[in-house]
Length: 231
Image (cartoon, rainbow, N blue to C red; front, side, top):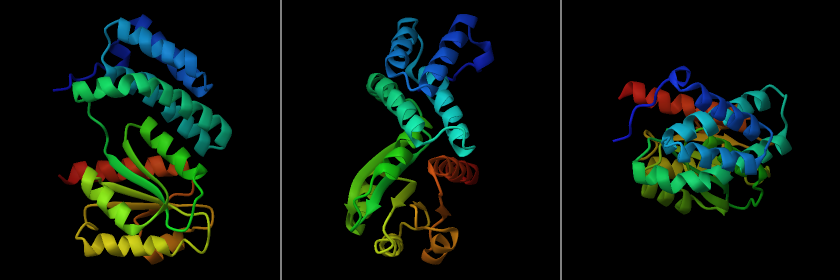
């Protein structure tokens, strides 16, 4: 069982400073320094869950807030996300061993007929940085692949992306298949992409339209919180 984390303010001062430095380095996209901070915290005997929560997720939360506020832009966010992923290469196997809790699981992909993936990849990196298990099924994804992956990983969330107006309608095909498989009630569907709109998402029966990666993270957290509160 995962040990409960101490509140940040109750950690030793030197550890607070280390995690704050990691957050700053993550914000600046300094992958080598984030990895160094991760290794240093492990050498100090800190748990992978604590390092993830205070060093990485703490930093990505700030990145997400500033991206949503228009202070950071896609290139800076990608750099921060890559720094986070570099540290996750070290932490991921340790988190698996210790059974560290994750917020939830999301299956993510670009729909059939569409091979654009920059937005999808950014969403995936920010969701992982927020504490989600992200199962990325790639581009040109058909309904069968989406459905089977949701089943295989018992995912609570499904995220679909489209950049072409001609591929947008395929999102409804996937949502209809979810209903046919009896999965619709337990899987929340998030959709995004430049040509989409709130009205389109509502028309196809999606649960949320996400105009950018920060909104996607916010909505994913909201749905997981609602599910836990309803349990």
